Image 1 (cartoon, rainbow, N blue to C red):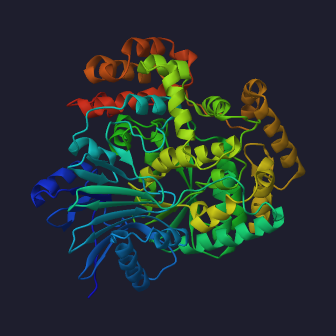
Image 2: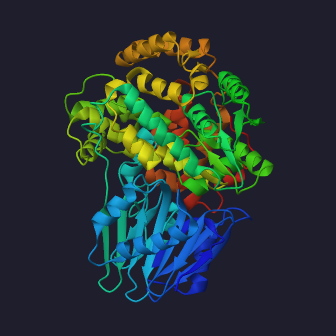
Image 3: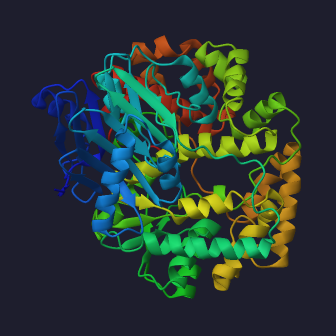
Length: 617
């Protein structure tokens, strides 16, 4: 017998082993109820496990069970009808829970399944528990185990609240200050782990064993389609992209495309238009945060494709916006993007929480050339390149502020690189950008969207992404493959201006500008000299500047929260803040995210809570 339920709950699944009484478990979920539209539900209990959800009613959580097992799917699997999907979930759940572990079946299923999901399964007889995520870990998930207790949750704060965690991980803090994210499964706090992409995690209560099995990892060396022409590869990608758009269409009450002037969002608009899919488009407008050219080109795209398009004015965020980001994402994303919360509130008010928010996220990973702009001979050179191209603060600044040696921080990056499957440095750098910056940072930002409504992108459709990442770098260089892809997908989209270069994508001038951009990337000193001029000419500058009030807020956190002094070298931090006009605002805000999460965890009232109405621009 098969029965199904619709869970009314949070943005995600939370569970623990051993089980605790229902009321205590329900109480432990309450801190994850972030708004009055959220509800906490205990959805499964056994002798060994307690599992619950916390979310708004429209959030996609599906539960299916039979006499043998219980399966909960958070997120969406696209291209399946309900009845077929329910049977499939029970079958996949059985493989996840099998003591023999048919990993080959699961790997193949993952690579054939388009979706963003976390699957949790429980065996009713043996009480085994299993987790399985999609091949890219599109829904960030965290877990803790110490031999006695296992906790997992879509929200890191649950582990911080409930697990016997001993404090912050200095190296996790250092990596997060350096890049904006920690590497691999390392987190900001000791004992917490990030569930890596394409992973099965099983808990056997009889043996007290927790087993983590990597089912699939991308290897970005030796692209499979380098012998195919650029035109052939673009045609194959267009077919897969249209399919990804079709499969994401119609799951919610309406599809709202987040439209800017960039290539990624216009590709999504073109894909939906080419397939005749119903949709509307929305563009954020802000003197402080959005370049005027983005809005102008978005309007031109909307006019060209004759779609319903709306602009939404957004001002600077206030303290409560920053506080919401800290409480929900716990330092995993920066605070500079807090202004986007007002955009999301306006969208939800105009439509409802059942909308599907469709973005161009991932276009910057799948189609451009991600390999280094200069030859890299070994891992040591690659570490230097990664730090130069991806750091918010310098290695020396991070070492002084954390009290760790610069060499130990460098070594942590080098050790991570050595775990990658690729052998050549160029392919390892691609792996870094996808698995570290993409999975550990950008996916966290997308997940912020899901606190309001479901968010997806066709660029991370597994079939499209796999094909795109097997196209050779020389075809992707200078936007060549992207230009061919967009021109075949919808020529009108390629005929409009690319805001980065100020010329149409399909024009010869775009090829020249892209070549010049590549040349400048090889000579960073020259790039730094001309970048302000390029931004000014192409209207990419905004009016947003770092305000002294922001620095004062950080100073107050240092003075009022003793835990900041336990985690960071506050004398060095003060010296950094004293010279804040010399630093880029992104580096100051990176520190701000760390001091804010420390303050929020350790203070009865954090500084941001006391400044809910303060404006941060």
